[in-house]
Each structure stands twice: as C-alpha cells, then as structure tokens.
Length: 161
Image 1 (cartoon, one colour):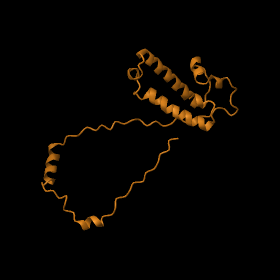
Image 2 (cartoon, helix red, strand yellow):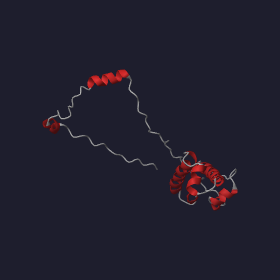
Image 3 (cartoon, rainbow, N blue to C red):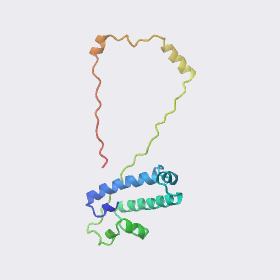
C-alpha cells in the first residue's frame, strides 16, 4: 500500500487493488486466525491478535483511501507514519485523489459433494437397463472412422485488472 502513494494514478490503482485482495484474504477469509498464525509464525496468541487487529485497521484505511478520501481523521498516527505520512504532509492534489474501484472478490466454494444414495425404485430401473451384457466392443471400426472429431473448447484468458 505504501508504494501507491507516490505512484502514478494507474500504478496506484494496480497496487492498491492488489493490496485490497491481499488484505481481504488476510482479514476476511478465515484462513488466518490467531491460532493458525501462531502455529506458522511462532508468535504468541496475543501478538497474533494485535497483528490481525492492526491489519484490519490498515484494510479499513485502504478502503477509505480507495474511495478518494484522503482525510486522516479517525486513524491512528502510528499507522499513518508507517504507511506514508510524507504524502499526507503534501498539499492536496489539484484535481483531487482518484477513486479506485474495489476489485470483485469471488467467494470460495466447497466442492465436497456427498454421494447420494439411490432409492429402491431407481435401483430397480438401473437393474432393468443393465442386462449383464458388455457391449463395449460392439462398435465396428468403420463407425469410429466416420465419427466427427471432438470439438476443442476455446480457452479465454480472464484479465482481472
């Protein structure tokens, strides 16, 4: 986030959108809780909680800045010192600060699908269809040669920013 203050508006947009994604992952995803951070870092639970609180405050400040509002009221001075206090000492930009669109975050989806149990009616229909014969070799070679080739799906690259 610090480097975005003195970057061009286009670079600031890219930097702060990337920072937004990172802060969102750290504070909103649930993957980074004090107990998990403590196991990885070796920090005490109190230190982890303080770090997480500070990270959440930085995230709130980033959202505030991305809205184009560069007032520092309500934010602790020690955070401003760390995040580029030099910028706040400058006179305001003549055209104002740009508003940066908050990137869309797609929620993770659990794809753990439980196997469904078939009811007795479905099982009996399946038994009727399965007559016990294996017809996998019943296709003749000429039928395979005349079959159209499968279509190759088009792959498009998604540009996120």
